[in-house]
Image (tube, rainbow, N blue to C red):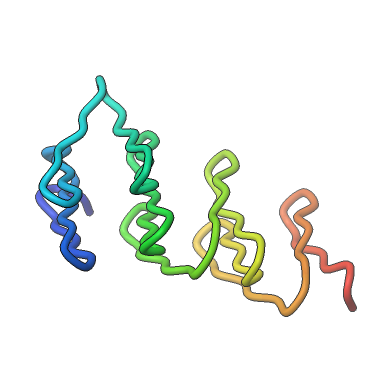
Length: 109
């Protein structure tokens, strides 16, 4: 899954496993977490979330969006382009999405 994987986005280089992150030639590391302000790079636990270049890495999957991303628990919820990740599945809706229990409910429909 992780190991020594490498993710390249634009001119930035992100490496997971060894916990190495380069942004524009800069390196930011804080304890076991990685938080970068300005380039919108936030790492939480074993997941990597980037806002700006729209690169989101969750587990062994890669999700790209064009807006903001919000992480809640072990799930990924995005508002704007209506991208919601539940469990190991990916759900897209044309409107807003609401999660209730283990199901996904849409107010539109």
